[in-house]
Length: 174
Ligand SMILES: [Fe+2]
Ligand SMILES: [Fe+2]
Image (cartoon, rainbow, N blue to C red):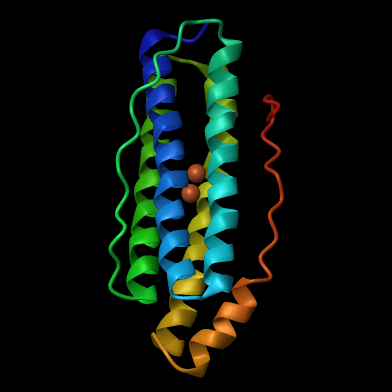
């Protein structure tokens, strides 16, 4: 049985994951308009991963058999100054999501909800990988600069990113 407070925090996180997908769609638009298709592809993969994260929360919530109220999803930013600016925002966003997962874990611990704590472990590991990935590209972009051949090389590299469906213990993604 998931406590009401834990359930509310899980719904908030579901919303944040859906917002993340939307947030990254804004970035796909930006790079697509610049014809930087590798960067656009990188964020398309990111959108798919965020959708998986969201479905993980949704399916976990469904299993509890409690009614779920789905809140609205906020509008993401769509005006960016440069590719580096995009990665600055993306990295800051992931850092915020990590803090949000930690807070969610705090709520699960407060209510002694061990099952939710086990479920959240996957997300804690995932967030550390997301931050590492984003930091790596951000640092390479800083070296490459916002234009010139460096950015086209990075564009070719990011075009290689492969989407692997998330395998979240205890929940089946559909
Ligand atoms: Fe996520
Ligand atoms: Fe993320």
